Image: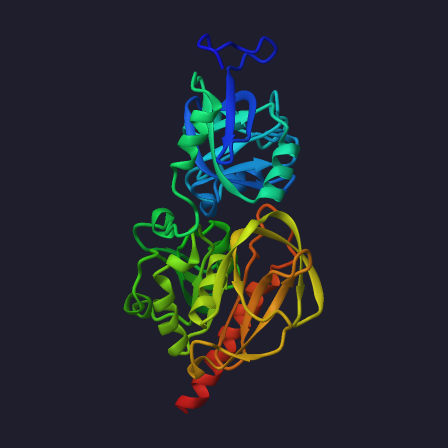
Length: 393
């Protein structure tokens, strides 16, 4: 790139470059904010819901490559965000919309990216980039606009950035103070939801089922959870390496107290570790709204929404095994499995009231095949309440 920083005559955009840690680079045009950014390069296969993707805290410190070629067609509105800000570190698209065309649009996607300081790049071959990440795996990346440094120097700067493995990030995206999402209609139960990167639609789905949701910071202790007097505990999705998560010890106390537990995504990985299983980093992860998952409890196949780069290492044959962490946790089995690659997609405890899934049942935007999981949690809460009443009598 030369020092004159030429402007593309057709689009009026300045030049930009994307550089991967292995030295692979793509020349394109600046999109969103001008500057530079770093993160882990991952790709999302969703053809809709880019606003939900951008505002999902699970994408913290990641540069998202959109495999759908046209992005920005429906603009941005004030209703569809999953949090109060954009969390992605950078954004990569092939063909940005010239202008939004949707009755709900309030501003353009690029204006939103620029306003929030999100550096992006467009007009690159996202298909080639995605194929490279599938073959070589997710890796560190940098996006640079208005730079004169050669690609080999930029690649060295990328390699100096921290890796996702070993990163503890939930504390960086969690709420600082507890808050309550009231039940809709008659309140049936109270749930303590530990915010590890929670999406706004998740407590909404619980509230729709008569649950008062107390959303707690990621560093909440077991005593702080108990202070809510919850009928159940929920662990949300979130970013980072589950091997670094301090919440595992808190979850073990929840399980030991026999409080009903439901976890999704990062919460599934933490349940796995609490039960004594390991976790590992996937080559390129699951990100999108079209992942087929088999629910072994019903033999139904669900099309599901995903965003994860780590997975639980547990026996995949579906047979119950003793939880490696100890007899007090009883038997556990893999309840859901990904039909693309046999990755563990859910855990079910058979002797204590706890289960989890690796995907996002709130599904906004996305399919609604997994919404029943919230109903399953409600059934678990009701059964536990009934059993507790019988014991007290």
